[in-house]
Amino acid sequence: MRGKSLKVKETIIEKALFLCAAGSVTAVALITLFIFSSGYSVLRSYGPLNFIFGMDWSPVNGEYGILPLIAGTLEVTAGALILGVPAGIGCAVFLAEMAKERWAKLLKSAIELLAGIPSVVYGFFGLAIIVPAIRDWLLPAVQKIDPDVPASGFSVLAGAFVLGIMILPTIVSMSENAIRAVPLEFREASLALGADRRETITKVLVPAAKSGIFSSVILAMGRAVGETMAVLLITGNVPKVPTGPLDPAATLTGTIAMEMSYAGPEHQSALFAIGIVLFILIVILNSIALAVMKRFGGAV
Amino acid sequence: MTTKKQNKRIAAAAALMVLAGCLAMTGCGGNKEDAPSGERDSIIIAGSTSVQALSEELAEAYMEKNQNATVEVQGGGSGQGIKSVEKGIADIGSLSREVKEEEKAAVSREFLAAKDGIAVIVNSKTGIKELSMKEIQQIYKGEVTNWKELGGMDKPITVVTREAGSGTRSSFTELAGITQKDDSGKELDGILKDALVQPSTGAVKETVSNTPYSIGYVSLNALDDKVAAVRVEGIEPSVETVLSGDYKIQRPFVYVAGTGLSSGAEDFIRFVMSSEGQKIVEESGFIPIKQK
Image (cartoon, rainbow over all chains, first blue to last red; front, side):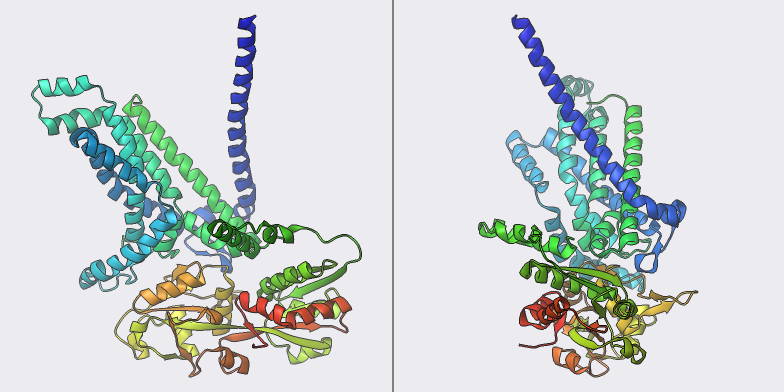
């Protein structure tokens, strides 16, 4: 009798969980369907290749080429990873292996606090500190070599810097967990073989935790690609392919956010088509990440 | 129809509520309710897409006041505004320019509802106080890229503009003549590609006031002490110079009637011209005709 009621209970819970899972899958499917159906009309009339590889984004003139936006997004993201990943992994190693337990706890919560700051605040920080700093300190030096460099300070570099800070919490906390999860025996064995602390970290611990570290980088990259508000305020939103870190750039997400409010029907459809491209871009990045992770072998 | 502006306003209202902790829910919920069914005055406004946003704001406020009235706002362009009242498709036509001589025949009455003016602002370091229309065109088309070509310092010009689709941007390109013709003779937005794009009036002001040697443009009623507006063709931009017609980067928003005006439409025009309607004009970023 008791066994039967347990079984009924279990079935109900199972069904409830299934409903939850089905609900989220349906939500994803509906959003996908919505984006694709909204963006399809421009993709068809303008041509997918013209759309993706077109160099001219001027919606008021009926030109919907988004290559400059794709380039802007990729450059800002790459810059953020170049700045944020080494700093993040370094910080994770320090927290996991070097810092005293009390300090590590304090530092870690401070870094996790970064994740709680709204992105528009990062944007203001960039606008008030980073952009003027680049303009007033970095640009005068660069202008001596290249007088034609854009002089406003709104740039890929400013965006990359702020995004680099924004992705730190993801990288630090996941990488730290991965490094801490490496079995103590690995450290003991390494030290017993005569390796010093640096060798133990670089040759044993980090390689053993590489899968976790790598997933943190992928998640961080996803955040950088999708970040909108902070980047919108500081990269200048110029729809031209940026040729250097000091050039201004427009990103895919920033353009959608900026132009959606006043867009006419065709323009709006083009913005949804950007959403399609963004969607596919993320899928590609995630697939690459999964493939690489498989090669690395094993998840921590 | 919920306009973006309405959404924004609802968002702002929601934020205020949270901040103040007051419970003014009725303010947001009220305007969603439909008017009680019964006799309805139906007014159709058609014409200029530039006036459309203002017409929608006015229509919304009007319908809230007069639960029996429905006001429908359509686009099509200023020329379409004339044609619609001529053919009797619309009760009121809207134009973002003067009524042309050859159009006068189709129009029985004109109402100047508002004016739209745009000020050109520069960063204080430029030292520039005055620009001609030609110079503004050259800067925004990218033909002039250094202030020294305009008698200023030897510094590159940082051009700031609004995003594609912004009404201020399309007014500015049209009124200042920053357009290029394409092969089929269509007027295209000719603002140079290197211009920094800022998504709001506030952001343009902020960028121009903080970025040395930059230039931007904002709606005339958004001017304040933070930024300096230049004289255009020797005329200081102000409400007075716009209303007098001396300041050049401006245009009128005109409502026109065809052969006659229905009582409902007449009432709507009265509302537009009232201090309440003119306040909406001002809130929508345009210059009211009747000054307090």
